[in-house]
Length: 128
Image 1 (cartoon, rainbow, N blue to C red):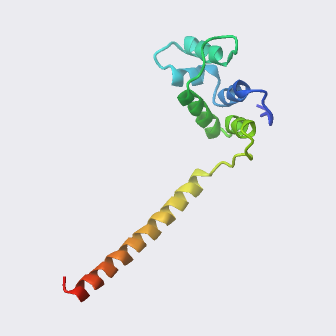
Image 2: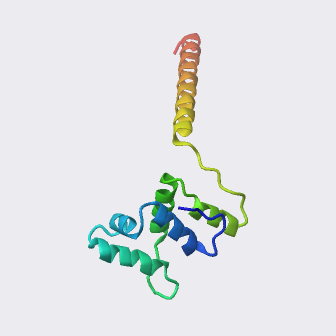
């Protein structure tokens, strides 16, 4: 599927993310598991139609954005950034984020160990 760099509105960006994530039935089944797949897909289509009352909730928009992200589509975040006059978003590689968090955890653990030793030294000096 050819991804677009410009979207007319949020629904256009959401539509692209939905299609990349497997289509209306796939996303509909995740959003409305209690409904039959065709009915759930219809609800998704209705929410994208500006002439219909049905609209996505903020949680649903976030879900669609995440599903798109998982499939290499950044249309929703790109639209929101451009619409709000922000720079292009930069996705974080999950592996890089894990490595960064592990490094920060190790550094914090070392700092706590150093604080603990300092407390022991100060406590021993003061006789307490």
